[in-house]
Length: 492
Ligand SMILES: *Cc1c(COP(=O)(O)O)cnc(C)c1O
Image (cartoon, rainbow, N blue to C red; front, top):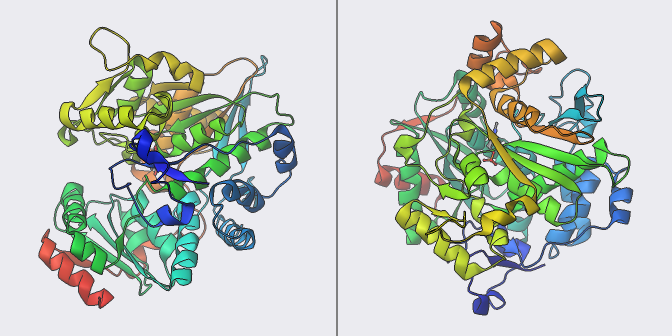
């Protein structure tokens, strides 16, 4: 399996292709594009039938081996077995089986054959779906680094979910350190406690005196110093990482296969979306031949994606125009993985994709509506890929959390509420709609209190997390100080 950049010129594509392990530790391709396989591997009906019985770990192995062809199969099987265990995904609700890793819960069954189903992806150590991919990444990194006798220093900024998922995946891993910046005193008490209570010597929490953008700017400044980055073996784990996307492909297969008894049955997915990473994995599963009917992107007030799927116009927002909402992990101004879908939509034309995303930089977006003056007319092909969308606001979120608690007796988080709201608008007779649950309610308790007048239940072990001793340093937004701090700990 070979990988190319979404911006590779047709003439260069063959010569510049790379294997899975080559792109594992990197981020963007050198031309600024994102990596995709030269062709999506296909699954047969017979494979799907056989896979219906597999455990999550074995299913992950079957799917990953189609993408990571340069890792010996026995090693890959050991990696997936170690990653997807009921001990790691132990935060299942009552009535859910932890051993299923991503258990399904039927919320509603209509007389016309409609079903509304929740797929729990948030039973891992940080109570958000990002664990599903990040945990695998931690084990893949450790494995690859050991082979190369190399080390990696992960450097990033977080406003909450990504940073904690990365730290819990990398803690105690050989050859890896994590330097994670966060805005001082700006995260919720729960999120702060989750990250700062880690005492592992390879985890460095750095609270920056400023807002998230100050922390993000420091990461950019350090990453732009290429000699420093190379000497200090700096890497990232952001949402464009290809292995993260592949790991997410697995739970679409698991969801489909668990919800059906034959491959003629129709299933759609609704995905609470921000950077388009999660739903991009659904697109890839569909392109591999998984019989997904619709892929519905649910956004919050930051509706860049909903706007595109309604109009064909992709218009990114300035950070000053980005709303701070009660589903904060979807507060994005541009969707960093969207380029992967656009590449497929424009017929895998790297020159075209490069031009469109250069226009995002120079003109803030592009228009594929086919109207006079547009940049293309490919919007008419979107339906062929199954995409639909919808949007949810703060009031919708509160109402949905209340409705779901009343109707089905469970408490959902704010992002999942956006998903359920939009899913209900897209139910069809005879089709099962699976909503991906992207976090547990305990992570966003402030809004749960507003909606229900009571606290969200905390999984066992999280009861007194705020009282644990915390390990972190506070630093001004000073790039030179930051570099000196990193160098002092790496000794490089
Ligand atoms: C990251 C995140 C999302 C958005 O996922 P994308 O892959 O960025 O689209 C949604 N919900 C929660 C809870 C998240 O942490």
